Length: 393
Image 1 (spheres, rainbow, N blue to C red):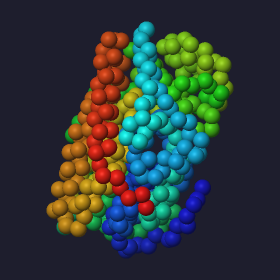
Image 2 (cartoon, one colour):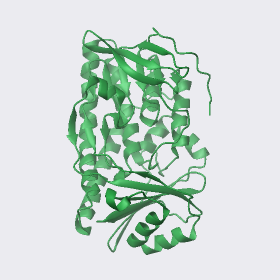
Image 3 (spheres, one colour):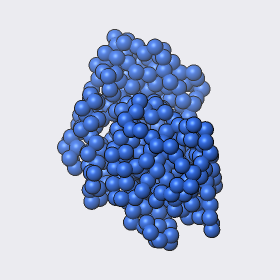
Image 4 (cartoon, rainbow, N blue to C red):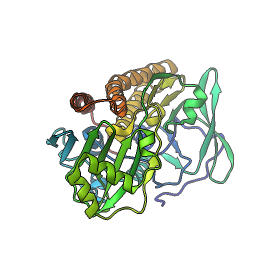
C-alpha cells in the first residue's frame, strides 16, 4: 500500500523534529507539527497500512479532533458506520446514552486501523512530513546532555544518523525512545486484563455495546466492511488462548440476547488474543525528547479509550513543541506543561480503567466506576474544545 514515493534517507540529514512511530499518535503529531511549518521526519519499522491490535472505538474527543483536522469526512466516506448510542449493561441494568450533537460531533466512529493510520499518514505527507516505513530506530544521538537525533536502519539495511533538536517517541509500550532516555515510570497500574477479539459479519448492532460482569466483560464495536469487532476481557487465566467460542460464551453469559445475535451472525475464522500489560504513566519529556501515545501512557484497554487519548496527546504535544521551539529552555518548559496537562486528564481515566480491569467489583461499584469514566471523558472533551483550531493545511 503506497500513496507517496519515499526518497532515500540520507545519513547526516537534519530536521526540526523526528517522530518515531507512524501509528495514530505519531502520524497525528507529525502532521500537526508540519502544518505549523516545522520540518518533520516520521519513521516507522512496520509496513504502511499494516494492521495492529486495537479496539477501534473513537470517543467524542477523538472524533472532534479528526473533524477539526479535516479528516473525518475521509473516515466516513470509507464506509465507517456512525455510532449514535452507547449502551452499558451490568447485572439487570441497561444504561443507554444517546450521542447528542455537541462541539460539531453528532456521532462516534470506530475505523479499522488499516484505514485510520494511513489516513493520518497521508495527511502528514500532504502537510510536508517526510515519511519512511520499514525503518527501525536503534538508538539516539546525544550532545551536551540533550537528545539530538536518532540512529536507524533503513529499509535497504543502511545505518544512518539523522539530526534534530527534538525527538518524539510514539513507538508504543516497548518504546525504543523511552528505553534509551531511561524514562522513569511515574504511575503503575495494579491489574492486568487479557483481551481476545474477532470480527463478526451480518451482526445486528446498535452502536457501542459494553457488558460488565465481575468475572469477564465484553463489547461490540461496529467498524468497517459491514463488520463488528466483538471482544472479551477477563483475567489471563479466563481468556487463555482466546477464540470465537470463548467470546460467544462470555457475551452469552453477560447478555443472552446478544449472545443469540452472535450465533445468528457470521462468525470469524479466528481471533486475536493479547495477554495484557500492566498500565503505566511515564515521565514523557526531557532535554530534546518527548513521548506520546502508548510510549508515554498506557492503560488497560477495557475502557476502549486508548485511540482517543492518543489523538488528544498528539495535539497537546504538537502545540507545546510549536510554542517552545527555538530555544532549548523554552522548549523544555513547554514540554513539561504538555506532560502536566496530559497527566491531569489521564490519571482519572487511568485509575478507573485499572480498577475495572481488576474484575473485583460488584454491580453497584461498576455503576459508580462508569460514572467516573464518563466524568473524566467529559473533562477531556471540554479541554480539547477550548483549544483554538489548528490550520487544516
